[in-house]
Image 1 (cartoon, rainbow, N blue to C red):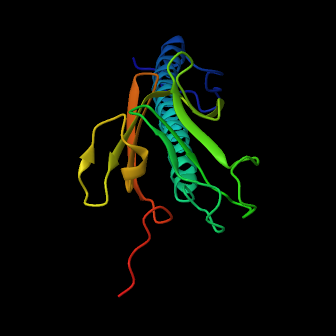
Image 2 (tube, helix red, strand yellow):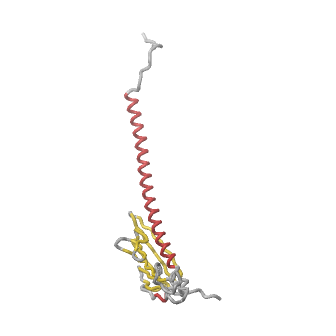
Amino acid sequence: MSKSPNPNAQPPNGFSLLELILSLALSSMILAAALSTFILQKRVYEKQTRIIDLEENIRAGLYMATSELMTAGFDPTGLSGAGIVSARETSLRFTADLNGDGDVSDSNEDIVYALDGTDFQLTRNGQPAAENIHALTFNYHDPDGVLLPPPADPTRVKRIGVRIRAQNAGMTRDAEAQVTLRNLFPERQP
């Protein structure tokens, strides 16, 4: 004889043990996938942040150096003798009479850019201008475009190339620029 289901019987309350184990396993897998995605995204974000910091730093140092190099030799009175003072492979010293008073002894008129290999910094007059700089190279060209071997004769330098290499956390970035010294060799007017 078969039993007929009791229409007044209550369904069992709660979940069975098998249902709980399955839901716990599924939830754990979803949580593990979300956590691994979060960790991966965090690593990518941190790496991108380091790259951006490195590139910003190298650009700022290069911009500062090239902007000031454009003033090298500025001498509105013709009395200061402004120009390139020293042209070495890893350092450069130049002057400019920025306030037009006939000398280059005022603040920011005698500039030295060099590499501090101990602290890995680009320095401007001994002060840090950019960090994580592992290489700084200047190359010099005469008015005819001929490369001058360092240390170059300061009176023959017409164009200066600046190359900077920055390194941080296993990443390396290079940047370079060329500056024509118009104040030292003015273009001839036809």
